[in-house]
Length: 260
Ligand SMILES: [Zn+2]
Ligand SMILES: [Zn+2]
Image (cartoon, rainbow, N blue to C red; front, top):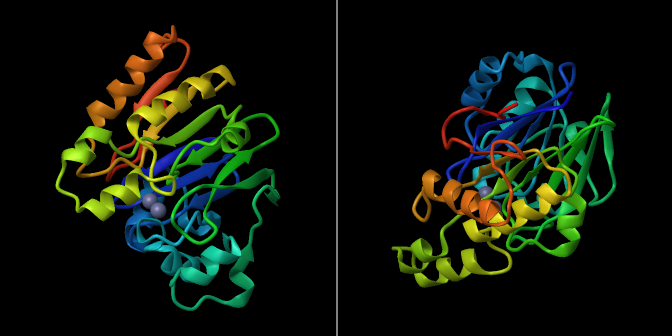
């Protein structure tokens, strides 16, 4: 069984882990190496057993600790050519630099990892789905808008960490400078609570059983609000949250495990 954990999530830092019990893979490391190792131990994974880090894009809330972890553990860092070129993670050995291509799966032991292009203001950013042949789990954050093609690719995920970045009104009337507001609201920014709710409904129709809302903005969202917007939208569309699907919000600075 594939397990997905959020170690931290939000505009302040993102780091997740996928594990089938034998093979453990980290996705992004937007925190210090020390904190990443502590979090791994807290979910009973020996950091030394980590097999690889997959990076979605070069923004600092995703790569802060990637270099340290990769150097310490001597493990490969998988990313697109664009992300590798743009992320400054210090020196890692050439043999640790692994390149992914959207839609082309990588295989590590019994886990298949597929990158998908995401609309976001970075260099060749991608999200990842993981499959053990039975279940598929996905981390889908930093997404300007949910295109039909991306939705079709992440459909069928049993569990998903889905971006619910901001409340559009909190952002519009909040303190961010106008250009930053435009960036976040634009097609290469972040998914709003309302967009997350719509995506959640489509995912549930495709078989998704567990949804964890993540990558919440510190200034333009609240965990209760994100949860409420998706909950209400699903309920209005005859989804019984708790029976048909579990819905939770990933903690900003803490480990969040999926409800079973
Ligand atoms: Zn980003
Ligand atoms: Zn981000």
